[in-house]
Length: 72
Length: 299
Ligand SMILES: Cc1ncc(C[n+]2csc(CCOP(=O)(O)OP(=O)(O)O)c2C)c(N)n1
Ligand code: SF4
Ligand code: SF4
Ligand code: SF4
Ligand SMILES: [Mg+2]
Image (tube, rainbow over all chains, first blue to last red):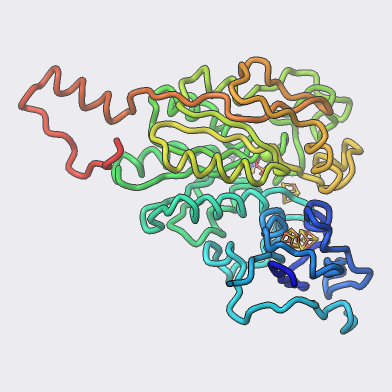
């Protein structure tokens, strides 16, 4: 069971790839699909590895993604 | 988008919100910053610092000049003022003097703070005015098209130096230290944790505090210099940065593609502007001097 989750606002993303590159547990990958502005948003490929550390949220210049730990 | 890629296989609690959102004027989103621009990343770090420092948000004011970075004041859901170009520090100084209990943060670009506003910067530091200055240094005048700024390293190609910059650049951390700043640190947008910790530290510290954040401007700086996009720049920051707390600031010059020394360089206590004012006036006027009525508890 994952310790945390990551939430993505696909339409706000500009496809910079910061979140994908700097996620310490490699939860994310850039999708091959486009959002309506023509950017490739991230996709969750390994949800079970997400610690909810929110590093993706700290990096995202477009406020399009964040992570959090599940309340226990 | 296909349904498949939109489906996010985590259980997201219904009440989950991005921690940055309460600090933004969401009606003004999306912002104008380009893909891979670092300014938004610094805003995330600043909001995490506000959360962690338990700052009273009714007492935090944010002042920007003009430029891409200057937009921060317009997006922050705090008392904020977007001043004219270069004048963030004089405006902030007036705000602080009139309302000493306010925590006044100046958030602006390298051009704004060190070219047109450079004079204000050195004097606010000299006076140890209680301001927290955050400079997003993208090494150029981004908003106006990528002209050479006083921070642009030599050899860089810019809109105004198409054959390469030949003038020496300011070393901002050395300048801040020499002018008298109480706190001086430099990070890059790769160092999100360290940057937000530094921001938290200055929110708790009195006196003139300065944080330089090296940040990508892929559109006007990296592209012209064939340095790739925002992500390539972030990878460069990761690979080229050396954390050296307490390093002599004179050794922290930036170059086009060399090492970036980051860390906290200065953390000292000097009497603040208010303390110097009050002690001088008390010494000369004695009982005839009354301290200004509203005084910040930390001054
Ligand atoms: C008095 C005045 N002079 C010049 C300008 C044009 N101008 C607007 S932004 C800017 C420079 C911005 O550079 P910087 O402060 O580094 O911000 P950035 O866009 O790089 O974040 C200049 C010269 C202006 N708006 N006002
Ligand atoms: S919260 Fe942390 S572990 Fe989860 S996706 Fe974001 S960066 Fe990766
Ligand atoms: S960091 Fe933000 S803008 Fe960049 S790819 Fe990830 S979600 Fe998109
Ligand atoms: S021009 Fe440069 S600094 Fe301005 S928003 Fe675009 S990338 Fe950022
Ligand atoms: Mg700039």
